[in-house]
Length: 235
Image (cartoon, rainbow, N blue to C red; front, side, top):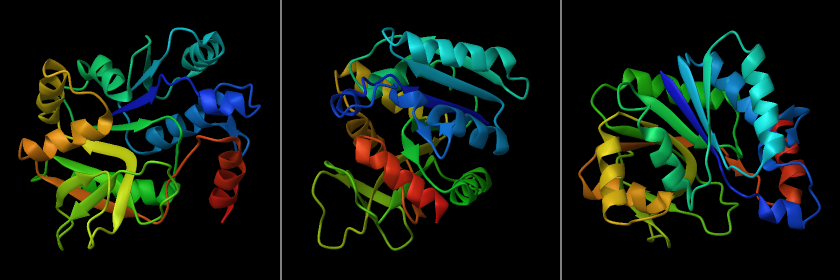
């Protein structure tokens, strides 16, 4: 199975709040968050890991190049390129993801390792779906993407505002089959941007998407999120 990490953002809010270390290599529980993700992916049957970073973050690039040089458990591929959005970063990686199921996440997604294993196990055992999307009922995002499902957790809509029966928000972890790349290509052709609109495109194209519920998923957007994430992982 392949894994991909989008780490091409600026991390400007962290910088403005006094965090000088680039987001991807900020320590959470004494580990750079990108290294934590890599270790978790290796523990969950990673054959290849693809990472995209922007081209004006030499500290992150140097860290990853050194990590890749000493890593002997899995092939890690680094792409250095600035993009206007996470969806565009995904597109830059997508040519490597067309021949096998894959899991994509942003670099600052914090979750419990045991829940992630259950998520990947569920995806690998589900032959009849196009994608499994991580969701949670814990809302700690300034602009959450709400995920509407039916009783069987089939995803029927992605919403900027919830309907009355909407329980979940997107956790930013996507396990997808290669056919979903066709939707991504359509979005690019139609000048659609943002990952949430790609997800809406999957529903529009009739992809069978299911939700997998995590107890909690956090993003590292602000300085205070670092302490919050460490407390969560120590629970």
